[in-house]
Length: 118
Length: 106
Image (cartoon, rainbow over the protein chains, first blue to last red):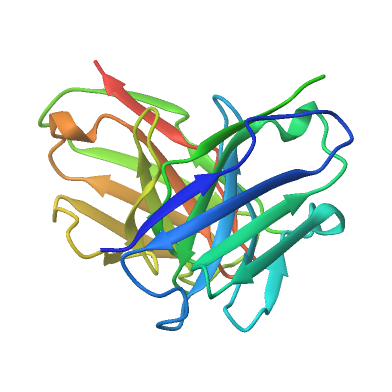
């Protein structure tokens, strides 16, 4: 059973860079034809796809966030990571990592709340 | 980019009711539509993909239909575990989600 777990700071200052890591367990991140995605959800609001990565390093990003997002993968650690630069209060959200089965999200982490505040 | 809308935004229903939620896309997405269920404080759960295919392990009371720009999620007989928020998601071009429909107790 694949499990995902997000980790990283829960508080980030405005204009700084948000950094999160997702650790995958219960299987190799490199096995199967899966991408690995980040999705966020502001409190009381809907879901926003941020971007995804394949284990080859190939990435796709939401055009609305593309200029600020970097997603990377470390197959030796079975992890993938998110960096979001120049954050503002509008980036405050629960951030989820998920297994991306051809743009379907079938396994999710529990989510981690990131608050942008000084 | 493709915009998704859902109606209603909130739906009050009783156990045993037949429930239908509508999702519309701003342009044709063929059948590249999925439905998710989310409970408070939890991650979403994939229910339906390709408009009408049931994800493994999902009860058969859930069904989906539609193509092009209009889609529906139907719960044939609402169960206590089904009170949640439901999101549609298009994956024809990048990924966008609908705003959600909350199903609560009447």
